Image (tube, rainbow, N blue to C red; front, side):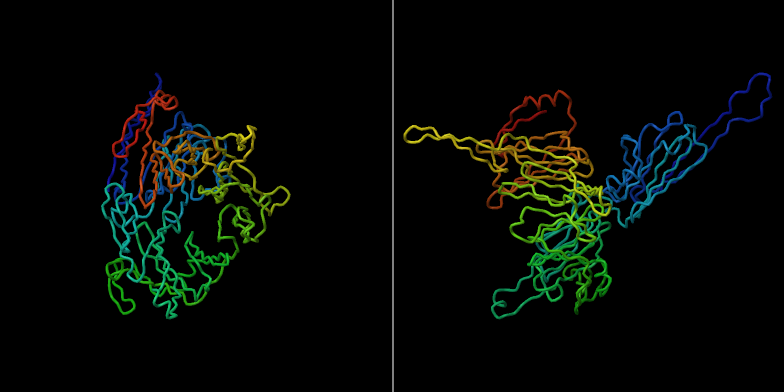
Length: 571
């Protein structure tokens, strides 16, 4: 435990001549504040000073920091006169608490009493604000994690031999290791609840060829192991059996506490994972505990015992939702809840329907068709910023759509455009000139594809939640090589704020992945024969002169011996 001592000295004002002093002297007030150790608990304080009885023109709000176990206070300038309720309704943000400093002291006088403000912030903590003598204190409290290593930024890694590792993001040190199982191969990591619950999925279970020739069939298709990440703890493992979910089952996943099962006929079925775990869990165990399972005894998470399959589904769970969609495409989100599908007909490919989850009614303007003429199809999904908006991405066009209440029907939602981002390109019509054997000139007009390599084409669209930016990778094929750049757009209005050119060339025939996280950009390129190249960019604040040099192309050309290429470097 740490503590600090605050000493306040107060001297009464001088009395006028000819009046009798009241005998008051200097008053000394000593306050001892005990502060928990930052390494052992997730308390965090911040103060905001007042000037002349008024706030400094700032709003403070709190939201979960996805990379830490506590909640942080962040400061943003006041934009407009929206109250917290209006902002909450407008953007649909959850677990957000906003204090307007002007509302705490509306009369412009120094506060004489201590005021406390508390707000619930999800399952793990609360925020408290206290004002005393023109200083506003924010105190954010949450659960204490059991191990000091739980507060370190970490990476979760799944190895080929079924080990789940938690590594330190800064040093690579192994903080925790869990052995999963020996009866199946685990291949995939995904989030059930982002930053809270993680799912480890096995490869599809197949029998050897000899067993299949004899006629032996295996009904179990997948295994799902579910973990809570803060701290790392075991929730349960379940097997997905065709005898329970139907012979047409092709895949399954967990998302936002829902078990999503897809079928070969295009059906998508949703079940409650919470109801399944409560009904079919045979025994509750945690990592490090001694356990006996199927005639074997060992420690959960240790080799060779692993983790038990403690959720045995013996009967078909209650069905929550069912819909038919082409190629099992299915998205759910929005406020109120809506889902996006493609009608289960081949001629409907590329056409998306936005429907209400409550009664399956189609939203007004809910049929979205970009009418793209391209090799790669357009795609649609709900925005990752939890605003309830919809992203519709094509080769040359990005539409950000929003749901709003229909003017004529209060129970129906309407799809409207929020903003549109267009690629920088000219006319899609190309004139070709040929000369016949008799010398006659023939002109032909050819319509280019929307994703023609010679035109700027959108390849990757992502969202950076901490900076509230849309990141868009645009590629243009110039000669034998392609040039790509990463554009950062305002998430609220779509304005392009910055463009970052990639130094390496971009071959459109290779597989590419781009990750943007705060000030780091990572580009992973997969070449033939599974040869991977990784390029890492770190963004720093530059002067206006450096920005002008970048715009004018004034940089130093350096040769990289390892890559065998020349790059232009701006220092």
